[in-house]
Each structure stands twice: as C-alpha cells, then as structure tokens.
Amino acid sequence: MIIRLQNLLSVVMLSGVFSLLSAGMFVTLDAVDVAFTEAAVGAGLTTILFLGALALTGSAEKAPRQRSPLPLIVMAVLAAILIYGVIGLPPFGSADAPAHRYVMPEYISGTQTQIGIPNIVSAVLASYRGFDTLGETGVIFTAGIGVILLLRRRLAPRVSPPEDDAG
Amino acid sequence: MTGIDFILAHYNYSASIILMALGFYIVISRGNLIKKIVGLNLFQVSVFMLYISMGKVSGGTAPILTGKPELFSNPLPHVLILTAIVVGVATTAIGLALIVRIKDAYGVIEEDEILVMDRAREQLDARSG
Image (cartoon, rainbow over all chains, first blue to last red; front, side, top):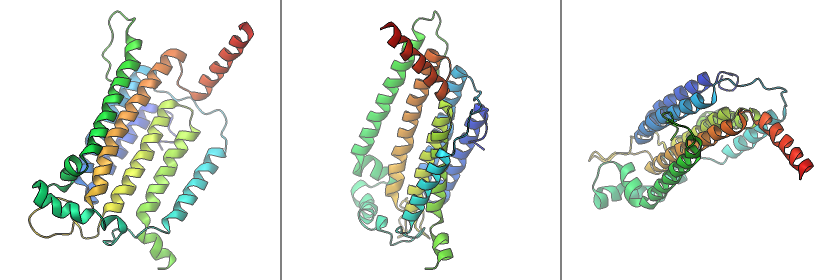
C-alpha cells in the first residue's frame, strides 16, 4: 500500500499508523519504554516533520516511467540471504539465548543495589550506558544545527518568513 | 527441529526481514525523495522490531523491579532501540530539510528529473568552459 500509493499525504499517514501499531506491538513484547517513545516520537513527531515537508514541497508523486525488475531482484536476493542467516539464531522467546547471558543479569541485580530505581531501562540508559546517551544527545544537537543551517538560508531573503516546523 | 517448527519458532526474524526488504525496495525503486525517506523509516522500524523481539523472554515481564523475584525481558535491546528511535528522527529531520532545499533549488523532488537537470547543467558548463 505504501509502495503503490502516489498521494504522499496518504503515504505519510499510513506510515504514522504503522508506527503506532508497532508501538502497540512493543508493549506486547514487554518493551514499554520503547513503545511510548515510538508512539510519541516515531508516530507523532516524525509524522509532523513529514507533514511540514509535504506542505513545503507538494504531495503528489509522479508515476514511475518505466518499471525495472532490478530493484525487485535485489530485494529478493537480500531477503533470501538474511532469511538464510536466521538458521543460526535462537528461537523466539527462549530464555537461554546468548543475548540474555552476559551483562543482562548484572544489570538486573545491579539496578537494585547500585542505582536504586525500579526501572531497569532507565538505569541502563542513564547510568550504565550513560555515554551512549551523551553521544545520542550530540547527534540530536548536530541534527538540529544542520536543519537550522539548511533552512535558514532558504528563509533569509524573504520579508516575512512563514512558520516553519521542519526543525 | 523440523521445518515447520523451525519457521514457527523464528517467525519474528522473518517478519522483520520482510518489512526490511519492503523498506529497502521503496528506497531503491521509487524516485520521489519523500517516499524514499518513508521507506527508510520502514526499514528502521523493522530493525527495532528485530532487536526488541530478540530481547523478549517467554513468560518474562517488562523490566521494572517490583520487589519480587521475576523473570524479566532483556532491558539492553530496549535501551539501544530507545537511542536508535531518537537518532532516527534526527536523520529524518535532516533528510527532510535537505529535500526542502532541493525543492527550492530544482523545483522538483523526483530523482530522475533532478539527474536530467544535473546532466543538462554539466553539458552547458562543458560547452561554455
């Protein structure tokens, strides 16, 4: 549906709905923090950014002139390789998967004794892996600066710049 | 484990891969730049799903301490994906800002038309220079 539609407004709306549904799926997978971030940022903020960009660029996609089979082939080959790679992975929901064995028990026991807050995700995010979060803040800062620099030159020559929410 | 059982036990990976392939297909097959970014977002969400589903433990609960000994899902992928979601929005914002500028400079946001204009410009430059 998202692939075929040529009205970009519908495409953006559908991708927002998809994002919200995926947030619901994250709740069922026990990732509540991720779910509300996805709902707020993925479904909310991203959709607003897209709508802002659509308002500035127009929302009709031109029909593709010739269909080449090449992208389809590339996609199928890639998917086949990745699905072949699944053979080596642990089954869904298994408690003894390698991902759960190394630092995870330490984080869970350490959150109680070292950090003292109930939410393990917050403890890992802000304390154990605080430098990751610092780097993330750096990325967002850089992106904000980049958006401002890109859009400021555009708005400069106008007499009254319109309200611009793409940043 | 036989074929059907194996597929059923690993359906989360297959679902992520199918979504990822669809997102990738949008990126490489569509000329409209905004649609490419939508495809990129689809790709991203599929990767989020892959990580979160890997962190799921059957019978586990959300990783919030309640005082009782419980089985938790793995909090580490959740943390990584929280970071990734926010970084994803940052890259989307940059991409859209670039698209707005491209629209100003070229008047279109279709990749093939932009390429045609670029080639015409190059030929002009070559002739005059």
